[in-house]
Length: 208
Length: 183
Image 1: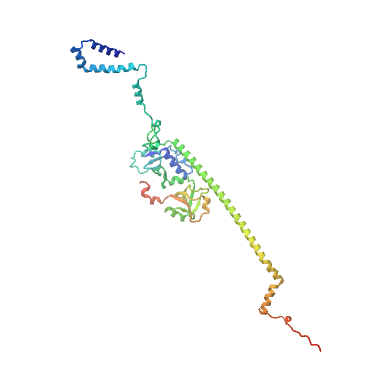
Image 2: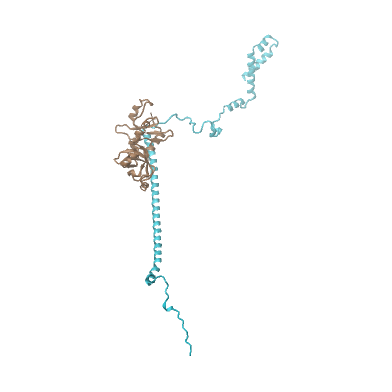
């Protein structure tokens, strides 16, 4: 407000003075800085008057320009970046390796690793034992089946043998088979006519 | 030369646990107040007394060839590979053991796997694919490997069947002389 007052006063002073006087001209055109300054001051001073009680537009624009978005806010797909996903290192983390040299941490790691390994080996052994049991059971089952099959086969064989034996034994008991063979051997295969079977022709005697 | 990170320590101990049953004795404090520590130099892991490791700091890293016992090598993929130089530590408290006969010792030392015909005896209840230390019948450690079959399965195996896959043997001291300690 103070600035505006002074400007008004300045203009008023110029206008109020003699127009054609050298001093007045010199002040206006000769000392350019003063005029420009006065103009600048005037333009600047106008804006606050017009926007009284409202938020400054320039300030708002400035604030908007200052806003920077983080990568998360932008929502850029991770695969579409220049740096691959795995390569980007987390910020704020200690650079370099973390060594394990004290006894306590080494013992802790060792205990964890050993427990893990023991568990693995134990489960492996249990699995192996189970598999072995299954294998044994299968083997026993296969053996039993084999034995059963063999028994059945033997039984069938026996029954077949018995079947073949029965007729033979019957013939032997009668003695037919052997007798036939013997008679054939002694007489030969020639068919001989039985004596009783000789045909006889008899004529009836004529009556006197 | 530097101590190992947590991840590296885990990897090394996990590998050692395959072969050893008791790891706590490895880092237990000694009578003179000293203890054993793990140190890394040129990707090799050394098992060394702390006092010696501290003295060794006076030697430049590229000048330091070896110190203590070399356990093995950390690969670039983050895995750990045991070397034959770790055998004395593994043999001290081995989890599973295989004793090979006289006729099987030489083939094993020349880099072959252990076949059933060469096995004198083996520890009971040994699952397959687990680490084991190979001894001669005179209880001299010859190397170490991974079991190919469990003890029960190996009993049914034919004589030329592989019982143990070789990982390292004492013959490497001669065969890999150039690359065992450097390169």
